[in-house]
Image 1 (cartoon, rainbow, N blue to C red):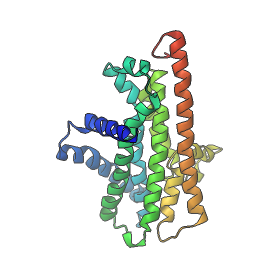
Image 2: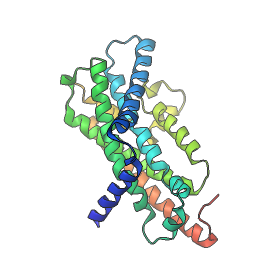
Image 3: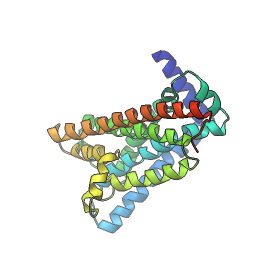
Length: 260
């Protein structure tokens, strides 16, 4: 069962990335990510006047995994509809959550590598002192961020069966996540109750945990942030599972593949 899952995940990754040679893959996945990070960090540099840009490099490196996890996984069913496979997937006895998770497996790996490589190259460009980092803590924060982002991506993928405006929703959610992540400014500066909304989005806790790895050590606060991020990912997975079951029943009763 496990071997089949990973073989399907590998096949799915080749379907989506197999058309790119190494140069194109690096330019598309790594090059765009690096340029995005440089843009946001330079904006922070010239708007705040800070010389030490470590916090912004860390935050924006994490924010890059949003695009891979949200758009890569969130558009799963929409892509399957475009390719003419949606009907077969819906009527097949295979779990629909498993179908989405085939995409999720490769996105976890890609998201993890995107954060790590972007942080390393961005750190070289902006003079980050790598010797001050606890890289075990940093790697755990990357894993938690990717896991929570993939969980949200899985949940959003289900909405492609409810609305035909899924990519509008994905773009809106991606921007909201970046705003509430604390990557570019403290969430506490937001007015009214908005700072509390950050708790329902991924990255907010993991970015805070990653910043604790700068000259820090394992602490109760670090583990609390990490556990909260992982639990948020599991909440997304649970809601995704329940949503798929409800949609399957409604589709069977109405003899319709979509709810819109």
